[in-house]
Image (cartoon, rainbow over all chains, first blue to last red; front, top):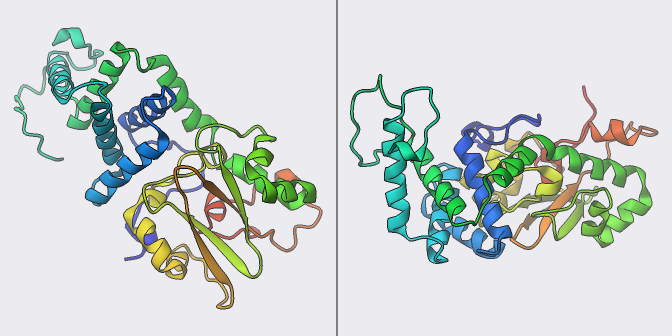
Length: 108
Length: 208
């Protein structure tokens, strides 16, 4: 299969670079944590490279997020248990929020 | 949609639902904010910058200046980081830039086989195909075939050099200036330069 056909080939316009807001958030968090000295960019590239290699079919920013989750845990910023508890809390909060209202953690 | 293993209730008319991945991002962000690692306003500013202010136009200006100003071209060859910084394009992922000049003998093409290292200050964020496994694996093995997929066919006697970006070094390809553009302004020239030409998966040509 040709590369140009197998991939969504973006045009050279100045259109948005992120497909969905969460991709932009995940991108920005990695940049800011690097700036804050939580991890070096070499470390980041290595971890992201491993995620991409291990899951070649997974969308790019999902691997980006997985790398970020791994690194914050490896660096002791947060534990996996803490993170998963927070995911569950956001899920409860979302489901308790009427459609169209901003979702706030306190609703969980 | 991947099955995430958690219980879904079925009163969809009532509550909201975030996708599993959006939940993971929100969880991570809220914890990082609470712990003082990131400032939500700074995240927004960064996102806005990459969405609206930085893009391949910066790189196109570097190329156009290299075409019209021999002293600048020379500086770019010797110290691309400093030459590019002189135009105000500095920052993350552009700390160690190398400019690769295409010539009638050599065509340069850039890839990051490890992940997706890319010169953000001059080209913005990488396009989808640059981050894809097919490009990252094939660019090194069969660059001429990859170029054909992009509609670029080079003469057989032209050498193709593939440069693998790293976390430390980022490359900007300076394509050949098309014939018939003598006397053009930098601005007019810059408009011809495409992002792909600066990665080496395209050539610069005059509009048909």
